[in-house]
Length: 422
Ligand code: GLC
Image (cartoon, rainbow, N blue to C red; front, side, top):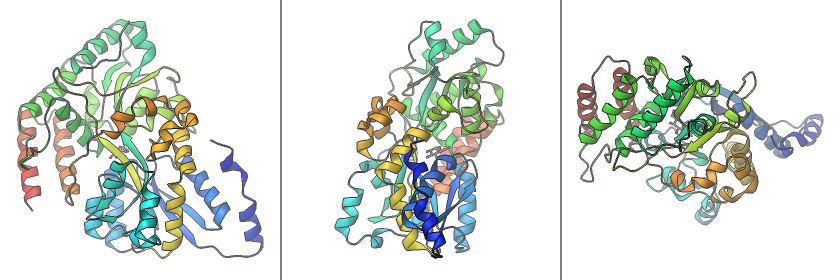
């Protein structure tokens, strides 16, 4: 943590003594999004402005938080003022009236454009729905292949570029190590938001997509079959443990951090925790972790899912002007730099990819700038909630061995067709 965030509590103290009353901005943040790192930045904001903030900690996964947010926002509750909105949500939340349009908070369109100019174009685009801005970029994200660099080195392997190579290496290493706790390949198979990416990444790296250019759904396709045959094989070959249907993003991260995984698909935040852990946690893998782009199938190309979070405002909150100040502060260069260094949240600002302190803490951000900026979106639709539930629950049934590949693909295909026809 940088020194800056520990220093200036004096202003708050002085204002408190003078009896100045503060507006309070309540900020809803998921438990796995590093509220422990975001909190001190908010404290710094309070010290500088006199505006109090309070964190309300939410669930560990996007779909759990989505459920809470939909309850709060549907009932027009002002209990929270700001929240972190997953990159999949702007079209849906904008259509539902759950995110305040932000254009009017800037002095002019020119001032808005100037504010947004330093951010990655793709991230600004993801926050813009029908020409209106609904979120201020907090950080972007992408899935990577994390691997145990010490083990790959011991067995003389380079990071795999194909899934077949990953399997060979995983088998060789787990057999060689003879440790029953060591898993070859871990990914997310629970019925969580991230499991949509587990599916899409395999589909993309097989040369497919969920939809063709003419708009028709193409999930039940050769690429779809290749993708699911691969996941079948991860279980049949034993490189992946049978419990994968229970695996959430943070459980995967914890297993890898405990030293029990050779290869894992996961998001940016995992890196900082591997190096340092967080309160109450150890790490067994500091200095032993490599990061690579996702492998592809023979003849396919590497691809990954775009992720990330935006500061969004509750339209029913009663401290909107203050909330807008918090959003701007949290998206500032210094705040994003701190998030990149201490939480390995991948910057949404271009210039941070050339910041030496950021690159020293997370060299992969510079090395894989192209991977990050070319990450591909999950379906962008106001019906994303339904799309997500359809894919993740079908994939989860497949991983739980309750449903075979053919049925899974057929159900996702017809379900997507129905949803998108609405
Ligand atoms: C990460 C990503 C987010 C994604 C989630 C899925 O937090 O940043 O976009 O939806 O993982 O688990």
